[in-house]
Image 1 (cartoon, rainbow, N blue to C red):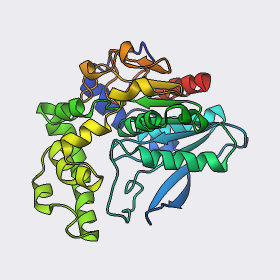
Image 2: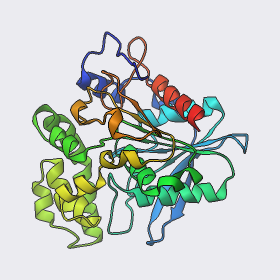
Image 3: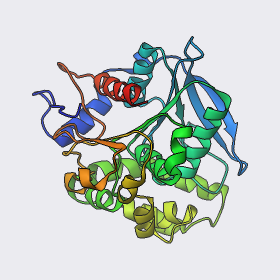
Length: 322
């Protein structure tokens, strides 16, 4: 996948982003039956995890951290689930707070630098199973997973054998600026805000006065949303402080566990010129930066395309690296 080329019938980063998320294979009918588990959190909240359990208790478990406003039912999650099942692995999708279909309880949500939550989940899985543990993250989940690997340093390898991040917004300020202007703002930012704002307002109903409700109602950009909601709820001074401190790019050189960082250079809201070069990462980090693929796209084959091959490729890299 480091030399991925899009099918001729699907040109450009926008089509390579939008089409696969809506129409490519696998479809919901292909979804394997998840087993849901609920964990209580130390702050009197909960997280829901969806599992596929392999018959072999020694087979690896792949843990997938999903992207913004996503879940275990997204097309890429199904692709990873099917790839893991075909390999004989167990598979888990932990849902970030509020993303499993039920509002969470605490006066917080989730964010791109949520490495403490990622670490708590991985360490709990590691503690209860002797099988090898590998982790992947997509978009927001990929950045959060990389931040965990950075914070852990040498200790990360005691929990996960290898990690992979797909289409992670490594420089959140660059990604935020890209998504908040022009076509991106009209399509992607608007689509995200259509679900993020109602969830935030429901959180305000749970915890009146938690944030400035009127400012949130006026928000039309991700920056404005993060400035009034995401940043203050999670201990940041504002959107700029959040985007700076939560970005994985500045600390990629500190990672000490085998790590794949996979980004298309034509991703509409992760600008190619914001991606790291080889000199900015350490020896433990492998960069795949194909010219095409869009944002979590990478379809293969004839119309309507299939995203399972990219999940298979990431799984193959993790198997070899771990």
